[in-house]
Image (cartoon, rainbow, N blue to C red):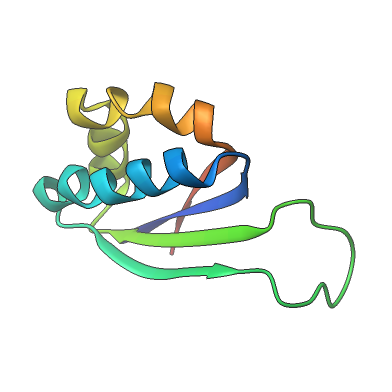
Length: 94
């Protein structure tokens, strides 16, 4: 059963965010993850939503999500991510 990570993002430092984004793909490759979507909010059709950007990444399974998130490579990027943006990461299975 595949799994997706959805990130809701509000960027605070554009330069640091660009650095972070440039480094994330290398952390995904060992887990056979695929970046499905990265974009900016166009319209809120219903309800409320505070984030300005969203990312969706597909993984083969939940174990791959956990492996990626806990990996030394990704954990090393978290301080940069936290300096650059407010990020909520959620994991879903289908």
